[in-house]
Image 1 (spheres, rainbow, N blue to C red):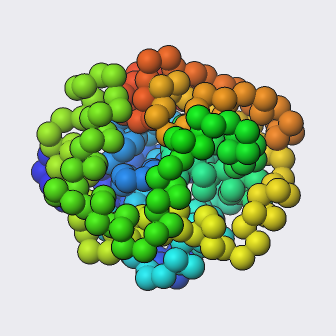
Image 2 (cartoon, rainbow, N blue to C red):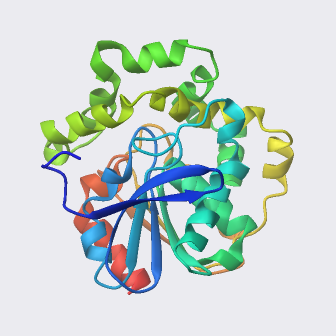
Image 3 (cartoon, rainbow, N blue to C red):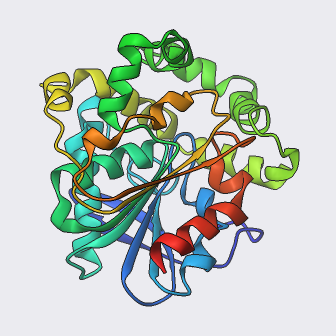
Length: 291
């Protein structure tokens, strides 16, 4: 691990047929931090020490990413595999339930864990990841969301997405990180180097894109989304309003999808990379909801 990285303890757990790398800090109730695409545990560097004041914080590299196993085949990235990893991590740390916090794809997985396995979730925090039913709703009626989701459809193609994302030494990574944020100091040269290094691990890029391919190929995926259970655990939704991939309408009219209290905190002038661009505000919202 690069010397410039934060000095967190790290380890590996064998869960659900894969070996997952993680970093951890703190003692107390278990709290899982689930990163998104195209990231790894490092996206939570501003939250781990803060949350470790009250929790045993574990930030894994999701399957396929960085130092975690990268099983081959799209079926290895179907949602049942991804949620199984989270449930396996909770058990691996000798807990019955955890606070689950997810951003982007980590948020998609967190929604699913809370919806189908509420007994395993103490509280749920989502950062810039749409509730699946709201996402289907907006795709069916919102032209801006359809245009913003172009990459999801492009990622269904074979090989082309890998070529596009990796060309120019992963120039795409630098463009989506630095090009999307308002605060240009959000990502340093070292941050970008570490993200490129993680995504350059053998097999990582295809694994990361297979998350998107799995959305459409899992048997019964659409029928499952149409029968999505209501969320029955207290939930905080944090949203950077200037998200180029996800429209603000995804935060509206969500009450029908919940049986438990929902809090929504929007941050104007903030990009998709909300916990990295505005860590002070995100940490304050986390404190108010969890401490």
